[in-house]
Image (cartoon, rainbow, N blue to C red; front, side):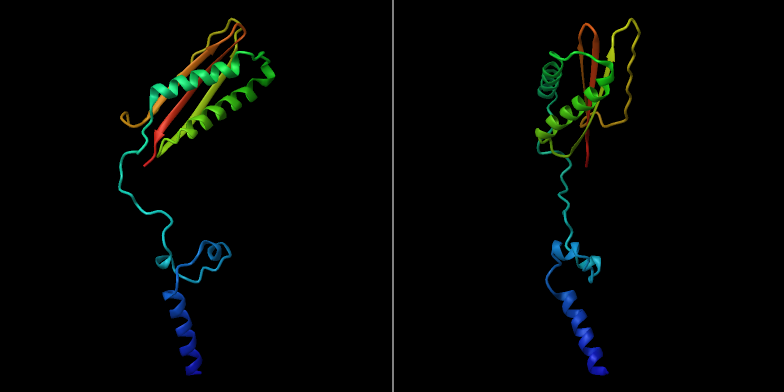
Length: 157
């Protein structure tokens, strides 16, 4: 009995002092070690600024170009306006993500409306850091519809 207890304690000690658990073992549910022995996935860098900061002027030009290329040949149909807004906002967000601005989160909002002698007012407010966060706005007007696109770029520490 004492030999069996000693063998199990040696086995537990060898597991704790053995090599770090690989991700494949962790995925299989073999969590036989406490969290203090698991190597963290990311280490702190203690950097407060991005290596690739956001460049407003270049992104504004790109945003205007995307709206123009999408909407120049578009024939407005009110039933497809929702899908158009979703596609443009996703395309804006994806194109800005391709620029790889490190530590930034991107939110895109697109409003599509038809021109039928009505008034339209759009207001947005946000609480953010004026040195690191930014907002881009662009509009497109055609004879039968309009598009207002806003992209918020928020620094994420």
